[in-house]
Image 1 (cartoon, rainbow, N blue to C red):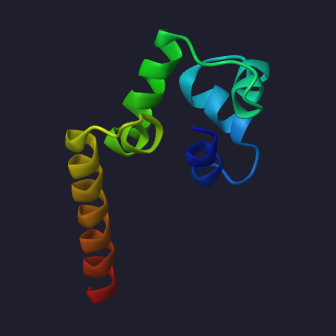
Image 2 (spheres, rainbow, N blue to C red; image 1 turned 180 degrees about the vertical axis):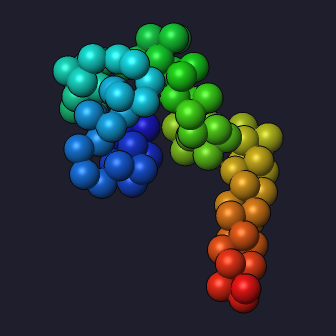
Length: 87
């Protein structure tokens, strides 16, 4: 989870995450320092925010459905980016 969140928010990851999921920044900082784990409420908020890529990156063993969905989402993002470059 920590690696995923740092990749998503290279600058001030705890503050960005806290703002987006509605938790105190100090709580998010504890998660990033591995001093605690998110409650079910905040974990659900992160899954809702980041989608299958978050599940694939943080759950071990990674569920096949999450791997497939994350790959499909990434593929769609790349296709959209290529379309924008071509137009």
